[in-house]
Length: 631
Image (cartoon, rainbow, N blue to C red; front, side, top):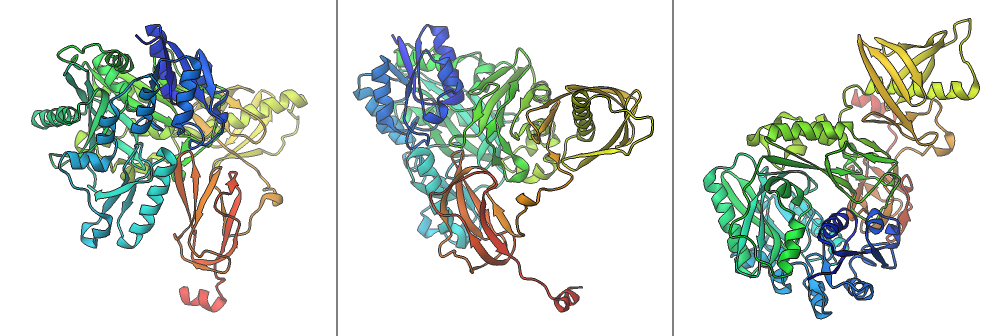
């Protein structure tokens, strides 16, 4: 029996495993990097061991250090979580060789299935050789052989870009998983990502514990997941279960795993088998009434599963809340998470708490928010409302995108549910949400009320000029009056009360209350679910950049610069110039227009902060004669 368990991971999954261990009476041990010294998973563990360094390569990918930490802390078992070393057979073997219990499948099963290329070969599916790809094979998908989570994946639609995308995917996979092997397979446009949860014990029982649909993805990484997968015909469902159980039995699988398929035109195409717990496992737990972590531990201790898995009840949906900006290429965000609060009774799996700092070195996911309800429609409605009402203060997040996704007609029609959801709908889903203009009014009046309190009364007998403030393109005009404030723009707004943290407005006859929170001068203002950036009336000349300046969209590390790139080089619009690595993802910086590279401040290995000047591309100046010719 396990008495003390170490989780070889960080963040949300470590906190999740610790919660189950507390319920089972098992002591817990965390490992942490220097960047995670005060992280929530460290605070929740009963003991913690430092892994010196900050990057994954220095810390969570160092299996030797993790094993030493387990032995030093007196742990007798290791749970790998997901990501990092969770599908690393050598790590599993090192854990077992150290006399520790491994919560997962055997190293041999991991070796057979954790490499997507070997898994396909085992099931008789031959991957496409990169050297043999022709224009007729396009589009193709470059994919990391190890790991998951969408890292190390690239769609290639032009043959000329294949070599560069292979290199980029390999570099990203090596950073995230310590393994740069990649392969190529045909890319199926607009299929559904459907997976089956399997669980197998040491007594020969293999469960197919229902399906999940994970079709809403960005950068091949899941955003919204649900169980069961809606709208699958019984014959296809039976095929998915049979093939999943057969895959597990083929390698003598033990523990929890996931078999993934791409469903298109009524056919199921095998993608891979993940030999670990999945990020989206909570929806399966909610629907089937199980604790998959507890079952993993029970199986590792030798206990037998029931002959049949528990039946599904109702529907569950999970939304991944990320610190990222979907409107700006899904750019990851860092900084202080001032508030992360949800209504009571909601399942929230997270590795963060209010006041924590979001580091640059790891995945940008803040929390998984999960709702279970009798029907799919009810679950979607409840989850959208819960996200909308949450207090999420700090960097930009994808909260508005999630709410819009859960309410979108395409999401509610399984026939239109596929992996192309965001390609079709992203522009509409990243428009300013309804009510943002009135939230800007509340922000302006709360600020005015705070200033009035600091400076004394602001009303004059003679009417003064309107005060003007702008937030994300919304201009607010108001003036102080004997009774408070009068708003002249936008129209139709009457101020009922205004205090520094709360404003009550009547908008076209409807009374609305706005909670307003600000964390420092010039910082974003949070008004209910809205995050607003105040715009200065007079831009500071000291921070002005020359036209064509390319600034770092996030803090990170320059991992490479385009071959031969140097000042004086001619570049074309959209041409990749350099690559930044941040939050375990590689981000390409491209030329904004055709012109001449006049400055290059980036070099491989350089650490940059958000807004740092990377390069300058100067466009040719048109003469009057040229302008006349273009009319």
